[in-house]
Image (cartoon, rainbow, N blue to C red):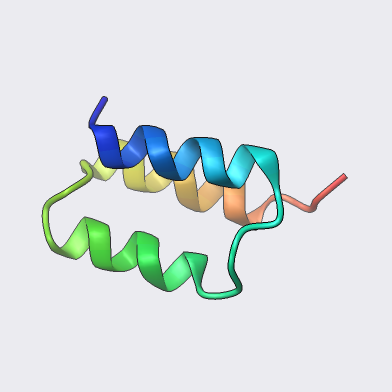
Length: 51
């Protein structure tokens, strides 16, 4: 797991992340900072309804 994934995961899990978090994850993926598997996990977290 990459450091960027860990930072994003923690940010999303805590809630209160910025509105542009989806775009940020896309940029990190496009820049090669996170893997395809990490990207998919983060996007699933963002798509899940907040409880």
